[in-house]
Amino acid sequence: MTSKILKIALVGRTNAGKSTLINRIVGEKISIQNKKINTTQVTIMGVKNIKKSQLIFHDTPGSNFLKSLNKHSRNLKTNLWSGIDDSDIILYLIDSKTANIKFLFEQIDKLQEVKKKIIIIFNKIDLISNKKLLPLISNLSKNFQIDSFFTISAIQNIGIKDLLDYIEKYSYESKWIFNDDEITNKDDIFIVGELLRETMLTYLHKEIPYNVNIETSNFKILKNNDIKIKQKIIINQKRYKKIILGKKGEMIKKIREDSQKKMSQILDSKIHLYIEILNA
Image (cartoon, rainbow, N blue to C red):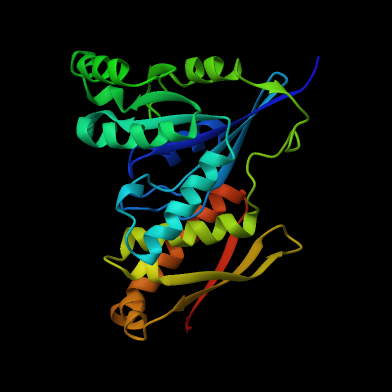
């Protein structure tokens, strides 16, 4: 039986649930989840193998690309369109609870410029009745060339198998890009850096998590299979250090302990995490 692939751009507004969905599909946490805007800064790929087909999902930054005025937003816009350009089809994910028809029209109108199949997915359907979704679906199908509509709950694992079975039919003959046991294009060092950034997004407010660089300077597997990790939080403003440390070092302690716990769960090993704050 011939091997097949399909590359899929997972697109949607911030907090639509893209990272939750991609983590659910691959079966492990590879993309960070947080309610703050643009938690996904780069395009992360998730890999799902079904029979002889390899489905490669591009988890893109939040698709508020029509308001890309500052440098940071322009970088996110570049990463977003790169993921779309590299893909064969587009899955556009919508938070059913907060769907805004004007915003959806603007987004889908823009997406149709790339001339690719668009499948619209309404997420979080466990929190809303189908009666409220039907007018939205009708309106979108009348005005745009939409391949199909799906309703899912990424958190509750509702409707995801049907979605995967449907898109798998679009896979085409090609050698697999990833090995059978690979679930992402990112390595463990990248993932532990993202986990620290996710924790900072949880505990710190406003601009701080978006204006620091995280560098994993040491990742060592010890003889007893514990992992020693050293990470640097590189700040571009000195005033951030006091905020990150917190009163009597309580904030950095919370960040370290929470990050260490997440890393232990993901890597299935005891983690010894050391964090240093440095000026750029």
